[in-house]
Length: 344
Image (cartoon, rainbow, N blue to C red; front, side, top):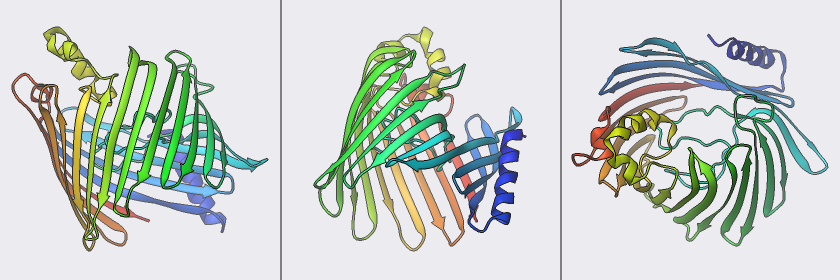
């Protein structure tokens, strides 16, 4: 068991019991997956707490894999101290800092670099940061030093500016990495009608995933009807993904699949659509990711039920495509899952 996580969890429990002003909560989740390579099971408890200037969250998790045995996945997700001075908010420690617009892909998520389209919501593990933020009525600034004391990870500085103009939120982003160099980006989210929102994001980076002079872009919309039907549509381009030439070379395909878990996208061009409906605690959804370069596709059907404190999720994701396509060559062609979550 991760000793640091255990100590944080114990500290949160003690603080919540001893201090009336402490804020404490969390959830317990049991999950079973069935996929092409075998069955997996995970049990995890997420603990979150806040006491005075300190915020902490940790996950106590243990996973079992059919062919690889069991693994401890416990971790500290957040542990930081925050305060205010001279109109600015400051934070230091491990913190989740998620930026940008978009559902399936976020080009300008330059700090957290969150992996999107997971089967179930995941409590992210924050980065080690020093952060300063200033908020106004229609504008905000954020300055972040990422991994400032790490000897094994890239040091970086990132900044975001936000401004509201009418019904549109405009964002500007900048990042300077010690090894990867500079990147600049901008994004907008516009509430066009009571039911429709339109968003776009563009970024140009000197280096991403060992590739140089990388453009990334996304455009999409969300629509929510009075009957609680929701639709998301997006298209994006990710210049950090492997090129068509790399996938066409049989010598490199195995290595690319080995790197797949670290990549945001397997192909550079993607089209994504998601439809969902919420009714009396039930939420069925269907989404489809299509890769035009080789007509690969991923389809996910899911059903969730939300009670007062309990949530149940089941779903199936299938990967496929024509012979020779990326998804057809993947060692995994389906993932079925079931999970039960209790919040407290």
